[in-house]
Each structure stands twice: as C-alpha cells, then as structure tokens.
Amino acid sequence: FFCDPYAPWQKGGVENAIGRMRRRIPRKTDLATLTPQDLADAVLAYNSTPRKCLDWHTPAELFARQLLHFEWESTSRLSPGRQMNGRAF
Image (cartoon, rainbow, N blue to C red):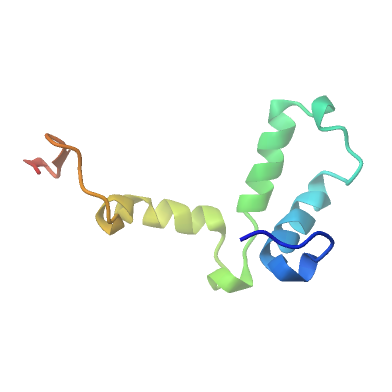
C-alpha cells in the first residue's frame, strides 16, 4: 500500500514513527555526518520507548519475549534435514 503524495493521514503509524525519530535526529540533519554509534543510539531510544498500543511495553521487550516463538508461528516449511528441538523434520 502506498500513500498519496502529501496525504500523511493515510499512514498515521508511519508519521508517528517518523515523529519519534525526529526527536533525536532533527529534520535538516545531514545523515552523512552521523556516526554509526549516533544511529545505534537513536534506534535504541526508539525501541526502548514504551507504547500505549503495546500495553506500555517497549518494542524491544516484546521482540525479546516473542523471539523464541517465531519459528513455531511461521507458515513456511522447514528446509529438508533441518532440526527443531533435536528432531529432524
């Protein structure tokens, strides 16, 4: 899905994410001047901010908690010979 030009209301979540990143990186910042550490710090701050839509958890907390379940929730088949919990499928 692509938004129409100059129609930010069509993707409120994207606009919200951009606004959160702009708190750390102002609009006219030359991204070429940022160090990898500056970018890593901005991403860490973004992922460490509690969200109402996540029941006041941070994205990092929920990702770490659910990381172990990704393989089981996948609809794709395992590659031939791949093992899960010590059993070949």
